[in-house]
Length: 141
Image (cartoon, rainbow, N blue to C red; front, side, top):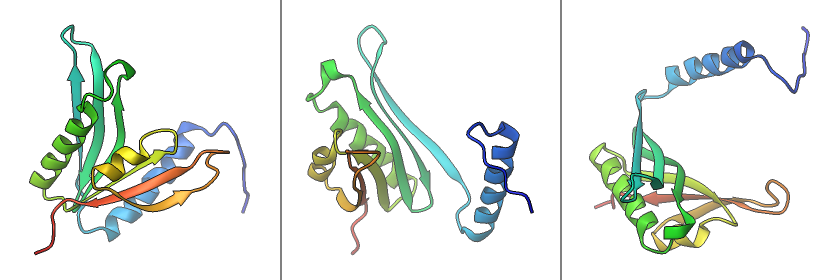
């Protein structure tokens, strides 16, 4: 065997690793369909002033990005985006939501909207923290 370390991997080498991992994972996961989900907010001039990027997979909504332009923050745009993406995820059959945020971003925002912090990476990447959250979208009966 030969181990090769590089800080400039070839795209085809990365694809081999990712595609084989995906193939293996899919063979062990019940729900194979991952569906993208995004909501954008435009101002009166059709400029993007906010958006949320996510995907749904089985019981889970995974939010990868939520952004609101600094000029329009604190006007409930972020809350509306989050509530709307959660509502669509419920329609798609999701019961839970997952996301992460940095300590300099929106930790308190997510806590206020019902997310529970389940894990924190300290000193990430050097002095910040990375917070991981989940939320139960559909309450058990």
